[in-house]
Image (cartoon, rainbow, N blue to C red; front, side, top):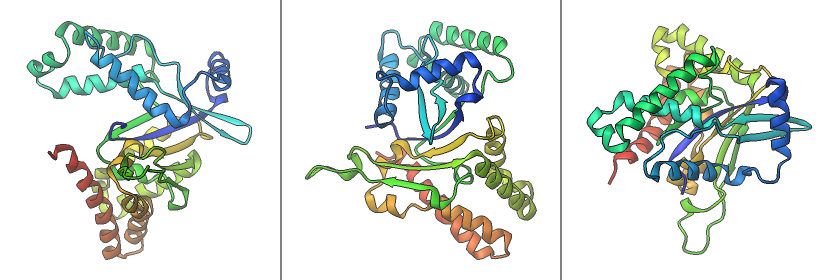
Length: 287
């Protein structure tokens, strides 16, 4: 079972990377030993579990991951680096800032926590303005409504997988729900959503965090691809729930309704999205 997490990813064209990295990623794409898409999430999760269950635990890998998610469109290669070390540093910083010191000491020895923080500080000082840019955003137990904004309902790709007799369908292998779009479309939709929200709701629209997503998308090559992957969240939903999940289309309808004066439609569509994911998030604290 994968962690109950979803992912928002940006795949940049190979030509967007520095020349020295272009050869590295081109060779990586041709390698037979790299993790394949079907088991990449499991491979990434396995690495993290081994680090954290070690003695002493390693909250951050010693080196940056050499792996990436890949996509090919015609003859063009797109790369989304895992950036496991950077993402782990960022996650550990959030954990350290939100967890009481005495509790954190029971999770990670104080000396290791301090060393991890010092290493991250040195990295930030030497990395330049793009040092903290990640190609992957992660959320656990739910999906932020703002993540649906860059996509269209027609870009939905659903695979239910196959379950053995007597097997719970939610544990079937191959289950997946993904949206993929071009960066140009993603930026256009995010910009439109911001305009609609500001025009009708003022700065209240910032509650959707659409502006944060829009700014993040601007950091990448304009010919990139953007992907929304339900990841392990598909294991919290049965087949009927997955098929019925039209969050992208519903949020788009909410924005259209808001912009055309159909307030009741806008409210109803938005509530469907919010309540669906709020009920999912509550499972985190269920016994």
